[in-house]
Image (tube, rainbow over all chains, first blue to last red; front, side, top):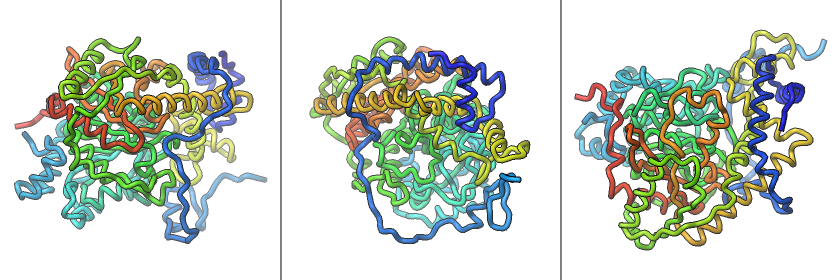
Length: 94
Length: 489
């Protein structure tokens, strides 16, 4: 398995992760090595049954009632930038 | 013997008899932190002891009958503590002050435990050495040139260096048990669903579980009883009653059947680790336990399965760090997309980025079936192996780690080698059952060796009973790390 620099760039875009040229080279090499070592999984016979959960699973339900939660001020306490009770972000349209 | 060397049950006994106070005990812990933590760096944050903090005040109003009343504990820095900075070992959350406490923290407080501080960890719990902390690596109290294990390396080192009485960690692929083994302490990963993760910073949600790191098995049972149980804030927690394990640890071993999987004693296992675990099995056999070889044929798929599922979930969980609602924001960017990319570039360290990249790749169009789909299939096979084995035996015993603690820097630039540190611990997370690591010997150069006892789903009782029976026959858990003795009069 060989992951090209272009693929690394594509994945970084999907992940919204800024990377520089050095990181691109490094991730290309490391992801290729890691995924090659994971080739053991390719030998698994196709199987109809697959599981998406672990442990003993069940679905607990609760009444749909409003309960106390964080106040607006508390929710904004860690915001990098906030204004007038809102999270502030850079301009998204001109 | 200083007060900070005591276990929970010994300290509780002393407090309730009036031999010493919680304040004196906490003072002893703080004094020892001042002596050794510049070397160990177990703590990311130490709460001031000189002035009463909200936790100490609440502790005084806590449950006077609880065995945890007045006991100083340390908490891994990915567990939210109201008004106490919770960094998760990352620049991304360097200044994050949670407006609420995790359920486990609230439960400890309700029982009167005193929060001493927050322990260092690999960034976002991604690592096996605590070298991936964005701040400073933690060092092993048995040998400061060695890693303490990870990702709960700070929690394990704090217990081993006696810089707290007990601690909490989190375990996604072995992050409680592996550092417990490296530091010569007890580490319990409960069954998936036993302990609420509300307030735990999410890494891989189908695997994460919170558990205790302690000086002995009795303390692990005490901590487990307090933190376990249903929580309406975490829909993966179960309503099943929590047994009173700490009063039921004595058990006749003659009706215990121990499974020994060949797959866990093969290539890559250090000879001294194997000898230590084999000798431990002899101890349990001498107590009357029956041993039997069991087969876990899907074991070779473990590492690939774990690192695909964990990174896929991480890539999704860590999408929330976008510089908008909390955490770091890059000052560089002019538009929103650039802000996301720069914030994440500057805020995440190398291993977090690597895992986000790997997970995003595994979930991306064209590769999903090949990687993530296959990993889910292998996960089902691994679980089925254990279901079959637990029909024949009550517990399965293996080494916790393939080698004793390695040197700082030894595996830092080789992620694949680092990933192999988890080879014996990941199955318990992938399949969800409980597992405990207990000290079972030392290498020739004085490094601790850990034995892992795995059990059936929700049967923490049996693994703790077996671990306790072993502990009664041996005194490995009583040995003290050199850095726990510094300044001891």
